[in-house]
Image (cartoon, rainbow, N blue to C red; front, side, top):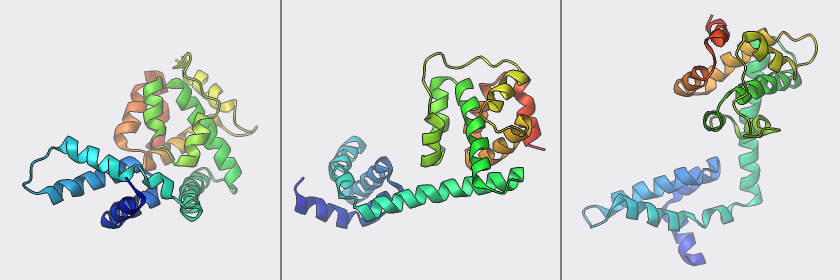
Length: 209
């Protein structure tokens, strides 16, 4: 697609392009364009697969159009989401600074991450804010996963490893689970819980009180 054609395509599919600049999600933008192509096609011959392929040709140049300003916007949006999570953790656990909230979140997420099978771990990570996703994967390897944590003490010991002294791992875990359940879909949290032994159900029971 030449430069003029790409520019015309952005103009014609302005809403999809604007959504892409806000979210950075090219797949969703391509889906919007494919839907518009389908509607525009009307009764003319064509298939959904052909619409998708045409949409991919239209949107494939869009990542190259992101300017420094729009990159900054995407970063600001990611940072804003992270701040919201940390503020909620501060309120939930009675912290007075985001550093403690960050350490608590990291400790619990890493313990949960290591207990999950690789596929479930990545599906769970896909629902985290971008900057928290980076923290989630820090130091992670798919080898020897899931880590066997069969008892409450084994799981809480894993959490405690990354907590500052004086923090109660059970209280921290319950607080983080409460925040996660406000932001991660119920279906995904159910899948996460299903991968934990029954002896760890107390964590979720406490989080729902």
